[in-house]
Image (cartoon, rainbow, N blue to C red):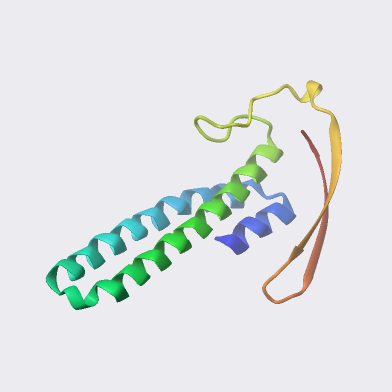
Length: 124
């Protein structure tokens, strides 16, 4: 998800960004499933509690990574079309005429340590 959201950001691909947003629900469901299953193991055998708690924390942290990837994807969708992306969004719907143009230079470092540079014109 992180790679897809960064690829969507660099390529300004709103379709890819929307697919990242839809995949977040699957990650949330997996996190809840892992929690329920590990809770069952902890109730059956108290010796599994320390290990299960660590696994629950790992699952929660991975779910947060997915949430951050989703936030990046939401920004890509928002920057592609200035309108509300999510319910209760802090990003207000504004007329493109009222938004000044800004040029931002973004440097991203991929896991392979190859540098990706992109210049993106967008409005704020």
